[in-house]
Image 1 (cartoon, rainbow, N blue to C red):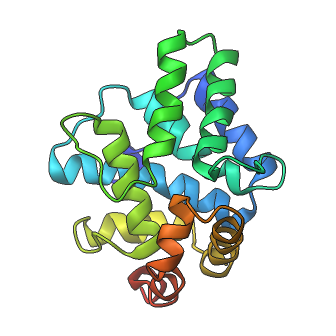
Image 2 (cartoon, rainbow, N blue to C red):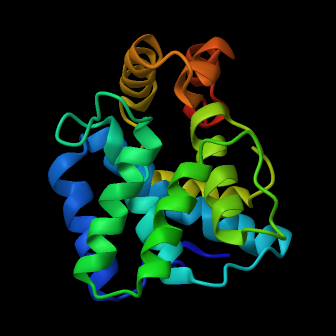
Length: 200
């Protein structure tokens, strides 16, 4: 896998998702979302888990953390569900079929699961392992060093550690039954602080 071979799909839906993420995400969360796309493709190449809908995966990767942003933060729903609804709205604007819009919601929600079965949901699985790598360091070493270096050079981590920790800690306090609360209790702050890609 080469960085040059992993460009985002050139489609109206992907362009709209990137525009939304650029407008409403912080720089660090935007770069995290873009890296999640690249890591998803890297894991697909490395593990043989092939996404059935590459455009849907791109839209989900770009928008998966929009629910953490003030413009879309939901008082009651988990942030991944709120972000899923942002994806649904973008997909509706692109005139996707209703079932495909619902799949965007599903994939974004599942990125916060501890594990997603690749046989049942390849897009959900790839986004889950991609975001796990970028946040907790899970799967570090699976992707080729050259590819990882190219992605980090183009889309640096910046203040992701402190920003993401603050965002999910706030979510956990307000929504104690959420997946955000689970990962905070599981030590996500320490994992970000000791992230292997921060030392690269």
